[in-house]
Image (cartoon, rainbow, N blue to C red; front, side):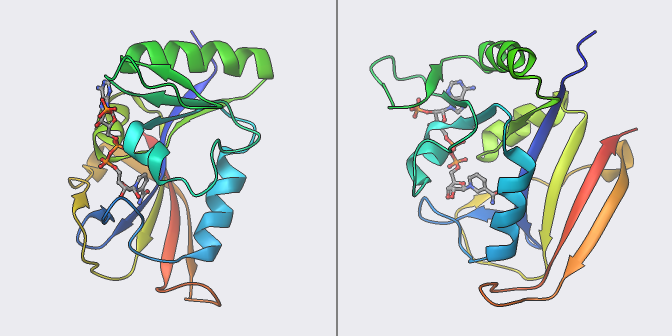
Length: 172
Ligand SMILES: NC(=O)c1ccc[n+]([C@@H]2O[C@H](COP(=O)([O-])OP(=O)(O)OC[C@H]3O[C@@H](n4cnc5c(N)ncnc54)[C@H](OP(=O)(O)O)[C@@H]3O)[C@@H](O)[C@H]2O)c1
């Protein structure tokens, strides 16, 4: 059995389930971006093609970037492309073993989070304390399947549009 844990997220989610708008994040949360960087650094990250497109700086440095796309001609610079989620996870696991990483992180968007939530052992979830307008939503997570092992509330500081809580959930 692999000692590498598949994680869903970090996911940042508004109270109404919104995670994206117009191909970008519909908020500015500087402190949460710092958390995203800290959680994912040194680990393979798996993302959908639109999330890749949305990254202001590509690839995410210090992490093996794996992008899921059905477009066989898609050749992003600095990332590995996969056509199947299972293939992406297999490559990420191999890379994690090589790098000594203990987690592989599925970092969105919505369909990738849904795929990951079936298989993940852990969720990194940022619950934003606001309803936010957007066009990409995540269905509710069935929290009866998960135990909260950490939660830290943050007021809206400099560079944060809203207050939020960073949570870690482990599969029961
Ligand atoms: N709040 C958050 O935590 C968070 C995290 C990540 C992203 N976002 C936001 O979410 C939005 C993007 O998410 P999204 O859900 O629209 O798109 P996405 O999941 O990032 O990308 C969708 C694309 O990924 C590929 N894909 C998806 N499932 C696949 C599968 N099973 N097999 C092969 N390829 C697959 C397809 O690419 P092709 O079309 O190339 O075939 C598909 O069009 C943006 O607004 C972004 O800012 C938010």
